[in-house]
Length: 121
Image 1 (cartoon, rainbow, N blue to C red):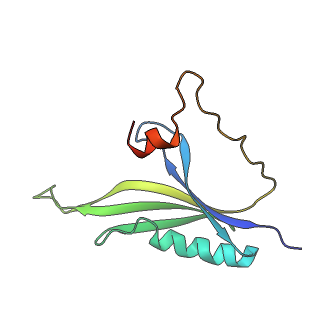
Image 2: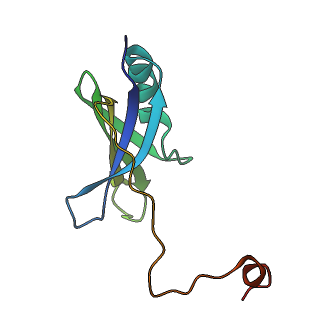
C-alpha cells in the first residue's frame, strides 16, 4: 500500500529572518505524481508576468526557486537582474497525523443565544 504524498511549499518568513513557513500543502496521489506535480509547482508558483526564475534541484525530491526581475534603474550601466523572493518545494510522505483538540470558547466571554446572534447582539 502506498502512503499519502504531498507537495510542500515553504517561503522565507521575512527578508531578515532565516525562518521558513509552510505556505502550501498539496495532497497528491502517489510518489511519482507528487514529484511531477512538484516540478510543475517550481515553474508556476507565484508566477508574475515578466519575472524570471532559477530552479535549483537540491535532491531528487526538493528544489529551491529564486524569482528574479531585471532592474533597469541602474542607467547608464546595463540592467541588473535582482532576486526578489525565493521558496522551497519538496515532496513528502505523510508519516503520522493527529487532529487538534476541539476549540473551547473563552470562559470570560458570555455565550449568546440564537436570538441575540440573529439580531447582532
